[in-house]
Structure formats: structure tokens, C-alpha cells
Image (cartoon, rainbow, N blue to C red; front, side, top):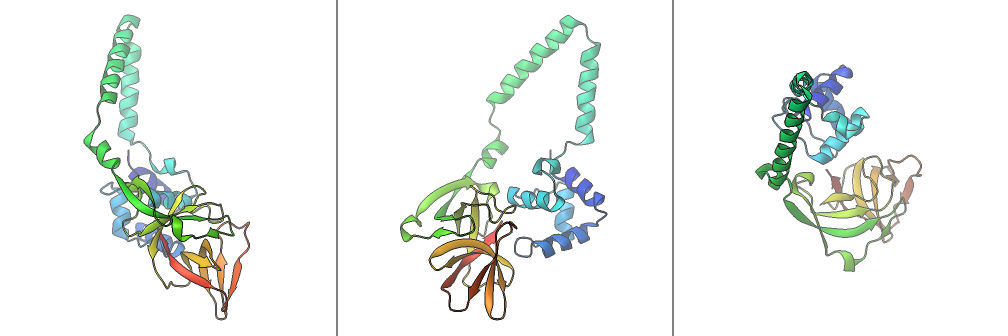
Length: 243
């Protein structure tokens, strides 16, 4: 079961070409996506699978649940119908034999740890730098900079330097409360970047809108007001969010 069928169906429902989809995603998520028509094609033809974090953004873009991206192929559906059809033609004693055999096979299968499953469960460690708060942030203390946390390798971005716990809903739907945001160290950023900043000793993840005389720290959750930062405020950029 891959993302190809679901992604292709959702794209066609929007009457978009692969190139149009790549361009629109890059425009909507400029600091998180750098897609090409070729990358979309590889996903749809299941030559590559996007990371889980990328799949979450695709689900958000199409306004669907992430499971809707992963659909069974028509072949699998047909095979299921064939099995059911044959089973229904058997007499009750033979149906019981089939059920017993199927249960034995399932039990044997559950005892096997596949190589693919082992690879998927490989863990990597990151340094966690405390937490951000729900719109107001939390102080970023030096004595919590060395907490080590572990993640599945295929669920983490390769260019992240550290992570931080998301302790509020101000950046939903992109960053869910209770999850970790991955940060690439940067001391300067472009306008519109989703970044981790420290404002007057308090850590925040916000979209940074750079204006002529001030900076706006914008939450993606509309229930939070923007934070207007004057030039004299003590603000430091720690890095940008990567997925």
C-alpha cells in the first residue's frame, strides 16, 4: 500500500498537472517544500515514498486525513473479492478448514520480523531544546539543552540539527501540540520563514514576517494574535523549521 494511487486521485480531482501541483506546494510552503514534477511523478508511480512529515503536509494541502493518501490498489480489492467468492462456495466443513488454515498462517506471519520492518524501526537521536508555549512560549534554559530523544529514522528530516517540543496549538495545523519540531540552525532567515526565535528570553515558533520598521511573529492558528516586535526588542533567531 503506497501513496501513489491516493495522491494521483486527489491531484486529478483538483484538475492539476504534476507540475502545477509542485509549483502550488512550493508557493504555499516555501520553506518546507522544494518539489519538482519529477518528484511528484516518482511518488505517484511509487518509485519513492515521501517522509511521514511530508505526507502530513500533503494531507493538509488536500484537506484530507493522512490515511486517505494511502489507498489499496484495485488489484488488491479484486483479490479480496475473489477469496470471499471462493469461500462462500465451500460447504461449512470446508469453510472451517479454510478459516483454521488462515488463522495458522496469520499466527506464523505475526512471529516473523521482516528486514523491512527492522529498517523502518531504526532509531536516531536528537538533542531536544525544551519546549515552546501556546502562543507565548517558554523560557529556553541552558540546563535542558542536552536532553536526548529518539525518533524513527524515516520520520525525521536529514538536515535537522536539533528538535524542540511543541507545547501549544498556536502553529496548528502544521505543528501539533505534543509533537516535536525539527530545527536547522540559522542565524538569519528570509521573510515568511517558519522559525524558532527567542524573544526577550522566551522561545517561540512562528512565521516571521519582516516589515520595514518591525517584525511580525505570526501564528498559523487564527485564534492567536500576531506579535509585533519593535527594533529595540531582544529577539534572536535560533533556526528554521524543517520537515
